[in-house]
Image 1 (cartoon, rainbow, N blue to C red):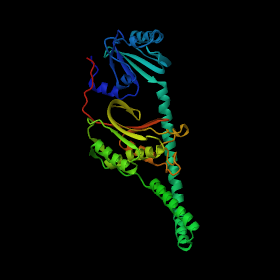
Image 2: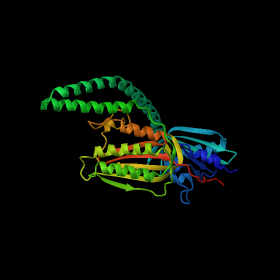
Image 3: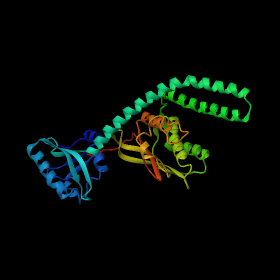
Image 4: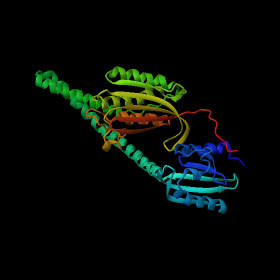
Length: 357
């Protein structure tokens, strides 16, 4: 009996690696997570043992055969998996023989991924606490700001000397800046106005705005024209991308030969917030600046966190919220000379799933 299309589609949604073997331990199907981890189906490596080291095979073959013989589900935890390249991973592996489908179902969960999921959940909770705290503080700050600005404006009309004029202007300007920050914090997020839009039309608007803002930085576009229209709020999406690009512009303003690349691609079988999606629109914003300091990398999406003295620390927080509204995810990697923010938005296409014959 063959595993049907619906069941395979469900297995493709899992973040764990699913490998289906026949009784001879030949690989007959892999889900997207397994393919992303380097498992292959071909004539040379058709047996699962062809893709693993001898040390790993000696332990796993007995586990596989025991599951087939006893018709039981068996699990090994904290197992060290070593492939032919001698790359090591710590995994939990569960194997179960299915009489209905006459195949061995292998599920692999990387222990490191499990820890990351737990850390991500904790981080998100901390972000929500930080956001609520920021809103509470903003309420307390807003009224005194109006008083400070009003007093400074009255003094500026009476004190006309250069010294007073200079510093009163600083007080008024900085009060306006703080008031804008407070307004952003207190303004509830807009409800998305969903409609189909062309992703590259949105990116071109971002490009035009960013290029006009700072033409000393080289702006590079690398688009995949095959990406279909996306269902979302185009204006919010432009805001999210523009926030990231402006953040990059400010980060590399003192970089020699500074450049920002906006890249779009279609990707397959990519995880977004713990779920594997068959087809994903990927947008990358890459700069060649100094990178984000290591001590701030765990906090870049927190409100009020910024590497810039004049920064509000809200741009990336807002961008993340907008991407999440669209069911997407945003991650980044940063080293000296290269910072990349990657946005993934799920696409709904009529993809045909594989079926085991």
